[in-house]
Amino acid sequence: MSETVLYADQPRIGDVDSERGGTEGISASAMSGEERSESIARRQGRSESVQVKILGPEELYELGISHRNEYDRFGRIDDIDKAIEYHFCVIDLTTHGDPELADRLTELGICYGRRYGRLGKVEDMEGSLECAVRAAELTSENDPELARRLADLGIAHSERYRRLGEADDLDRSLEHKSRALALTPDGHPDLPRRHADLGVSYTHRYRRLGEAADLD
Image (tube, rainbow, N blue to C red):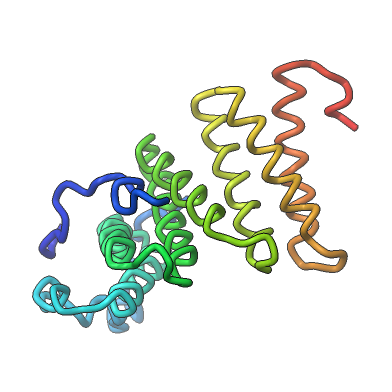
């Protein structure tokens, strides 16, 4: 990484608070306008590692978002590394009762998911799942974000099932996706996708157990 690493040995998310697929790299020849257009993250340059010590969680969160956007646009692995770095610091600086904590965990989980999709490392898959678990746990039953966070959690368990083949992950994916679907009102733009995601988990269970009921 070209900038100073904030935490050389990042602990797992669970250690911070005891209470609780990426784009491929763009070739050097495909520059032109992109080369001339500098993003917020790039303009920070060498000063980021100096300034970070005096930044609060809101500013660090914006830096993390900026680097994730850079990664989504250009596919530079360095950007998703930095996004994870900054978002991890945000979580470290956010108290358990802060209403922003669930959203910040969700964003960190997204970044872990991006890097997992690119590099395929199990620890990134686990990081994404852990963030999704904690974000859902922090969300009240009457929060309109609960359905989305349960859907994300179900998808994270599905991904872990595909990778490790553990039946418990398959059961949990069905549980969380079913709850997410039940909380999604008719006409919601995410309703078709949640039906489809739940169908994927039922298909996985049919292939594992061979029960015809899972095909209905």
